[in-house]
Image (spheres, helix red, strand yellow):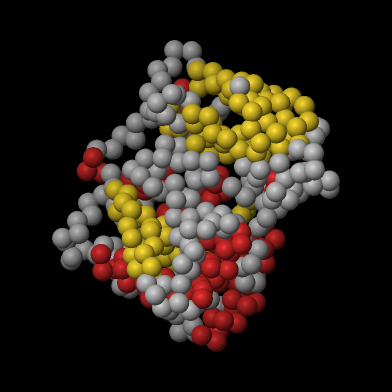
Amino acid sequence: MRQLNIQGGGYIFYIKEDKSVINLENYESLEVEFDYETVEGKWNSSAKNPQWCLNLVAEGGNFWNGATTLKYFGSNNKSGTQIYKYTIDSSNTGNFVGICIKLNTYKSGNDESDECKMTIKSIKLTKKSGAVDKPEDDGLTDEQRGEVMKISYASKDYENGGTEATQKPAYVYLPAGFDKSDTSKKYPVLYLMHGVGGNESEWGMTNNSSRIKKYLDKKIAEGEVKPFIVVTPNGRSNKNFTNCSFDNKNAFYSFGSELRNDLIPYIEKEFNASTDRNDRAMAGLSMGGMQTINIGINECLDIISWFGAFSAAPTSYEASTTAANIKEKFADYEVNYFYNICGTEDGTALASATAATKKLTTLCDKFVEGKNFEWVTKPGGHDFNIWYDGFESFAKIVFNK
């Protein structure tokens, strides 16, 4: 048993002691049982009873980064014993290393400091009869697989007007066949942004086991996706970029200068990236969706032409502001595509994402429904089920023109 005090978070349990992967298709059900009790004096009196989320953790991922949500479920009281059984179906596929039980404070109306005591009693993963427990095979050869690498580039504290250089990290996906010495071949680039509490690792694109890499490797090999580079930077443009707390949120709004002056030039110098705006894209989840709208479209339409906003955050510009900015500053620049997605149960972003995008086709002639603009809603919350769906859908669209 494990007793935890969880505050706006949860805990990962690795399925195997060596943290090796299992293929979810070999299992038929997952059951968790735990005791819970809200901590006296540390639970908002107006909040609902605790709400939980059952997540799967992929190889190379962790508690925050790239988890796949299986199910949200709620409790009937402020304390008690919770037993939840999830039946694994044909939609649940892939390799995973761990199970995460997460306290969903945003669904409960909690304060960030609220705490709930939790004692794990059991976690049972039931294997299908006769199943051989081995990882899922992607069917690709080594030559069909790309590579993920970590980089460091020079930037500045743009939020505070600083001029002193600082080194910032990012991860880069290079598609199969990439050869740095072959400067005759130029690649499109997608700059993929994280959320308010995340960093360059939030998308889980930190090693060759990442879901993004596996998806792109397979779809590029099958011809469904055009080969392109993906860059996941840290979206805070100040010297304290490692501070992932909400208090550092203002640094997100200065990222346009870093993108234009530092990151794009570095990527185009080091990785044979195209310098054509038609070969540059920007997309992101939550706060990264805000950056895609506020920075990508409203500040950088002269250098970027493809955009994807996945559950764009509440501070995203409303459609009227974007339309006015384009008319004033970017009348001569076309939008190749603007893709949007949000969960219908997303209490954090649905209203803001709707206000930011849905009316653009009526306010600005740069966006035409069915041609270069798409607004999608599907059942789901503010989580990676929606964000991975958004990324994978956008990957099939971007640079295909």
